[in-house]
Length: 295
Ligand SMILES: NC(=O)c1ccc[n+]([C@@H]2O[C@H](COP(=O)([O-])OP(=O)(O)OC[C@H]3O[C@@H](n4cnc5c(N)ncnc54)[C@H](OP(=O)(O)O)[C@@H]3O)[C@@H](O)[C@H]2O)c1
Image (cartoon, rainbow, N blue to C red; front, top):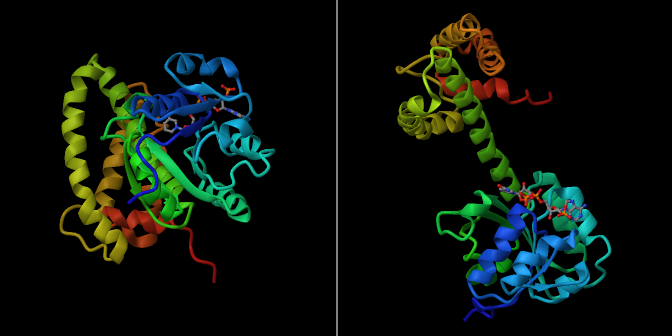
């Protein structure tokens, strides 16, 4: 039987857009919720909804066995925990601030040196999505903390535990965001391109959405190629895509756009062709993305 119930007290430190959404989800699920934010006024709506405002970070940490921190970045986390003394003793520290893997490991080492159970996390959704089962949260670090606190953390969304290395959640976070940012940059370039002929982005989006679904279907086979290093293909070569990218760059310029999005992608493909991957599958691009191993 788990020692922690769904109504266990929780603390949320950091009440920006995301931190406030986390606190609202805990309150909605019935958790007595203590909150703290550097700028105290951001706690007002939450207090009106039943949260307790702590006067200091230390008071906030001491108020609950589960302490969730969600602030701007790693420096802000450091500012928050700098002078908390032994307040975390016996508590679980869940850090949902976006960081690099190395920064997450640094915070984990800080916690380990003080005997604090530490779970790092990443929220793969917007504040409005927090609290729905579809919201994806990634966790790494203390397995015991993840297992014991699942009943409480599940009110934020569906959590996946990635492993004991506290840096893993940040690693996956950045990898998934890489897909999002590069895809969206491509979408914005595509919208600008069709827009040069007065096609509304909203009209184009219906087709773009279908196309994205088809592209997602390519991933499992390409992932096998990345893992195996076998780039033989009878589907489509990297070389033919490099030629197509040339068309995209030229057409973009002819239509009055910059080539800021497709230009660097074309340069990457050209580098792969120059390294002998012209007849290989697209997945061979990883060979030029990876830095050569030191001799
Ligand atoms: N918003 C999203 O869609 C989203 C999605 C996924 C992940 N995240 C991650 O969630 C985290 C918070 O994002 P957010 O959208 O809530 O950002 P935000 O609205 O800009 O809020 C930033 C929070 O950090 C606090 N803060 C900044 N510097 C601080 C310092 N030195 N000491 C103490 N507190 C400090 C701010 O306090 P003040 O109010 O006093 O300035 C505020 O509570 C980020 O790591 C972000 O990457 C956000």
